[in-house]
Amino acid sequence: MDPASPPTALAAAKVRMRELAVHYGAGLPGRDTHSLMEGLDGITLTFMPMGDRDGAYDPEHRVILINSQVRPERQRFTLAHEISHALLLGDDDLLSDLHDEYEGDRLEQVIETLCNVGAAALLMPPELLDEVLERFGPTGRALAELARRADVSATSALYALAEQTSAPVIYAVCAVTRQDDADGEGPAKGLTVRASSAAPGVKYSLSIGTPVPADHPAAVSLDTRLPLSEDSYVPFRSGRRMPAWVDAFPERQRVMVSFGLPAGRAATDVANSASPQGD
Ligand SMILES: [Zn+2]
Image (cartoon, rainbow, N blue to C red; front, side, top):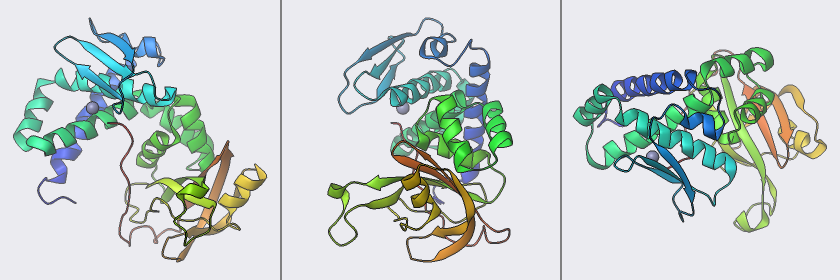
């Protein structure tokens, strides 16, 4: 935790941002690009090449710009992120709380985090998360279903699903590392963790780049193209293997994985998670 910023202030701001996004989303006819814009009175949407930037919201000219050269699911998350900027700017109370609490770069950083929180809540409303979790449980399959139904990247789905999961579960998106990613020492090609996030209260996390052994159910599932659900382990980078119920769901070149930890083992190590995508 960052000692300079009380977690309570950020947590409260996230709750408020989520409310804003959920409320906004509830008034929309759908979640397609056109529908997403419908609640923003007088704000226009423009797609254009934007180099390294994903998008922007220009409150002065009341226009949202989206980089037309990135993949569609990323454009979609960016649109929801920029809409969240507009929603945030429309909430004077939240805005003044943030300005009281933060300044400079830290303020910018907090606003970007909040807009990612808003984007996730807009594209993956609580009822969708609950429905997916109820139907599939906290599994790799649920992760794949959520990404498909919400039309978001697996990584975006992973963070939202983890946050909503009450069981002690770690989720991961794994993919085969290409030859040019290998650093010479390790195997030239192998399955690695691309993104990972755990349910609240779970202190373990898999770091990006953690190799998944070829005989692990996640690797077998990807090889055979068959979903697998079995007693196995979490392959921590240190080499340590923690017993876990593994559910692996292959999809294209990736495999969505959940690791169900035994009760009581969930809360005793150092967290090590990554940040969500989006600018
Ligand atoms: Zn932003």
